[in-house]
Length: 136
Image 1 (cartoon, rainbow, N blue to C red):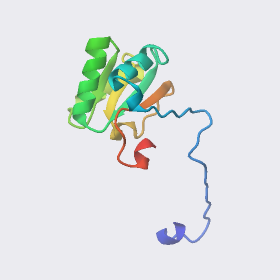
Image 2: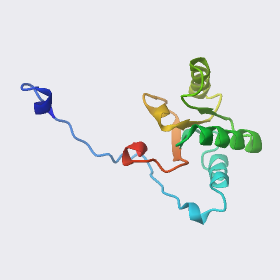
Image 3: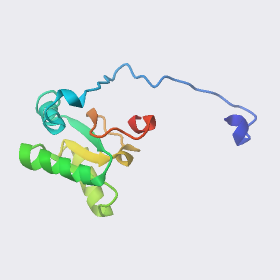
Image 4: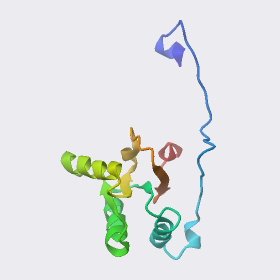
């Protein structure tokens, strides 16, 4: 890579594994559940009760739909976040999530870039990402 960039001196390479020993990865087979939405509700009300997290969806429509299901039907403090929202509204939602006023943010995959929230305890992919990089 350094050669392609034309960097010839003082090049240092750092390489590390994708694996993070402090994280737990879990793959759940959707066929084992009557409803993926209800499985997520169960996780949020038990294992991740009042914990901060992100649920990623592929589409804006899925973000909005899942947010409504969780918020209205199951009283889970959450909101959706995607590029079609006005800038001010996105900032307000992110601010509420950062302050813990809402526990779960349901977003398209672009949301996570640059987020530095120390108390995030889960990341759920509601939809299968289109590539392996989508999980990172």
